[in-house]
Image (cartoon, rainbow, N blue to C red):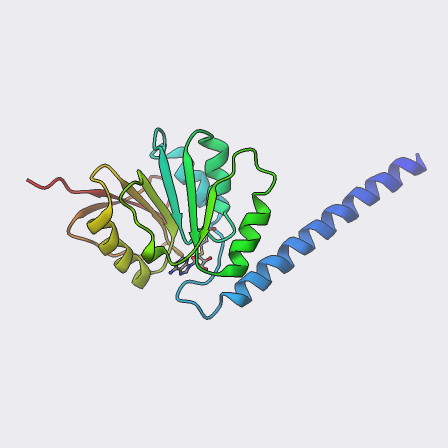
Length: 191
Ligand SMILES: C[S@@+](CC[C@H](N)C(=O)[O-])C[C@H]1O[C@@H](n2cnc3c(N)ncnc32)[C@H](O)[C@@H]1O
């Protein structure tokens, strides 16, 4: 009886330690990226669930997460789309290290690249995902309009419900059902 309680206590302590380390790492990454245009903040579980449930990424061969952070979106995608080619682009070297460490033991590893997302060519991708702020979204939509194939979709998560992401002449914008934080941009067919 005694040994079972000790093991139980040990497991609880271990979980607490792991959780504390996780929180400390998240805080450090937030601090090292704080001065950037878009700091490191992981996407919420509910937004991730919304993206997966939308099935918009089903049958998309190449999916890129622009500003992939530590790979929160990529982790969900790799689980649900094991055959997709997943790419993450991240500017902050510390965040890239954390992302590479995180996916070290995943069965299917995404390609994590350190660099500026504005320099990454989108010509070959079937879907662009990300969690951005207004100014970045405006510039990204310009980039997507120039580079993306016409079937490519852009799934943009935003920080809070009242935030209305920018419009773009080339895209139709829709909020995903059951959320006020995940938007989808699809090309308006040119006549
Ligand atoms: C709001 S976080 C989103 C992280 C991740 N996509 C997620 O949802 O969990 C935005 C990330 O974009 C990165 N970032 C900001 N500007 C960037 C740029 N120009 N090129 C690549 N990454 C950038 C930041 O370092 C940060 O990790």
